[in-house]
Image (cartoon, rainbow, N blue to C red; front, side):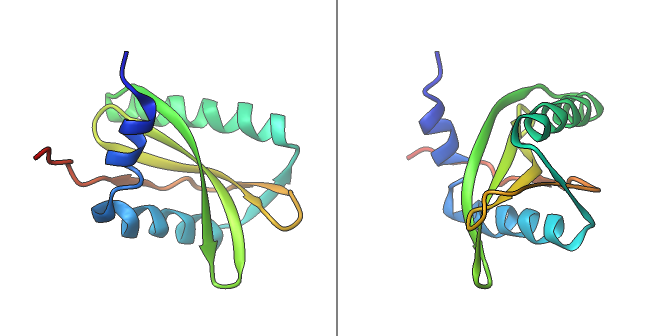
Length: 117
């Protein structure tokens, strides 16, 4: 079984992908956001990720929550990593008040391939 922490470290958290992941958060925050209860947001957004993966001809490798800062606010963003080295930004939670938001559009970004030494 693949160590999921290693997958996250070498993809979503890799230095060469920080700009892409940050751009996903920015893109989400620029779209209209709908407040939603946490479990409802999770279920709904996982369905969106499944459809997006199917459209890409890929499978979902994992879902990951990532804490990110944008200007003066901290957010927790749910991200789905696809088997084709792409990721989709899903719902976000305002870390200060715990409110979950579902974006109107979910951006998909291509991640840089990892290199092993």
